[in-house]
Image (cartoon, rainbow, N blue to C red; front, side, top):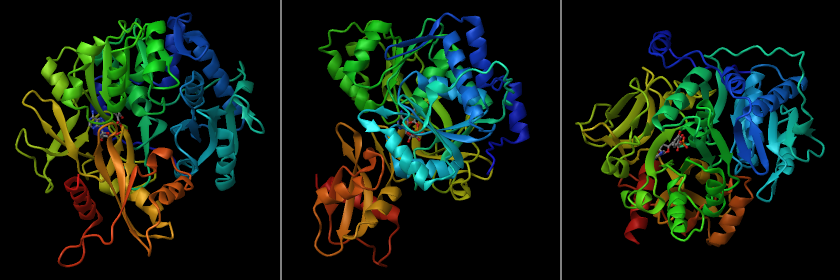
Length: 538
Ligand code: J2J
């Protein structure tokens, strides 16, 4: 089994420790400390359940004992695919306590993605909820196990059928859990997958806890804070910016919403006195629309965070007047760097920029394509190195060679400019992915699937502006012979066992792709030309 590392060079690690960013904290130690400090305070609310910090720890320790009793060994990887229910937290804290490494999958992921995560991480177990949103994850688990026999255990929250019930995990007082080292990898997060399949992002206890501790500070969290997790809990934004981990770190309360819809969330905001939540821009627009006619009292909400994709200033302006709370723009990435507008920034900074980094030691470079710094204020490629940004993906030498410089900077693929006050404004990106309502879709990955269709001769997938989604995916296809119906291509894509958000939103048949005089252009140029052509035609 390939071991999981995230190796910061010694001199950097020493600097980050000396600066007090890395404090030697670990997930198990942190949750035990909170449970000891305020055992009876409510920590997690979801569905009909309300767990105190004491209960959360008790359940996590039972989960840890259960995982170890299955024969899993510290360092083993476990794919976790759980919707927004309290057991998400007891399962992942249980894995941390047992020194097992969660690999976070989104509820929308299907066989293709889960098999990829399982193989890439060498996982030996898979934890799911029986069902969610009308989908049966046990049926998916059967297919996963058939394809990846190394998955020896499937653990199910709810009716487990032939698998292991999560509810059967019981505490074992004789077990002594060894604490992980703070520099050990705590989990594998998944990348937005800007080229090809998603990559796995190894985050250590030290670096990740620093990122949400400092985020909790920037976002003003304390023990009176109530964080609503409306986005999928497996996503890095609600997890850590400052997210539910930040809220628990601050001794606050976490409310899990099964859906990010305004209806479901507004009811929870009123009932639980939610003070802060985070959304992607299309959801923020829906909330703004719904807020005008809601009967729910939203006055407890102090901060609405918006991130994951660009929030347009015209929409950003409406947050304070309509919702009566402060907007915080968040420009982050699962690989590390997170920028925030600060709560006390002037309104124009909050509306027009994506904020500035968490850490004084986030080294941000804005470079032209030749690798030279652009003049201050000009747009350029964003590169970053710092105390919570990874130095390498897990088990992916090809991606590492492309995505990191020799001196350890991560090439974000984003094009940004910096204002004189030091705030970043996202201008676009250098890579060909589609940012569909915050879900990143790799053009290459989708093209590969389209090419598997017998009637497709060639395909190029591009992002086009969409009023509601921000961007939608458009596949340009050269048919092999008579073009099939667009609906047939979509139906075919649905048989590819992919997350539904990857099915192209729009399909355009063309007779040929434009080529240059020499007859050859890169996929990147081709996609750019097609995007232009599409926009001209609008
Ligand atoms: C424009 N583009 C943005 C923004 C992310 C906090 C918030 C978001 C993420 C996230 C995250 C953007 N404006 N405000 O992990 O902790 C695009 C950029 C970026 C990519 C990362 C967090 N906020 N983006 O979205 O790993 O292109 O993380 O590089 O999913 O989303 O995507 P992801």
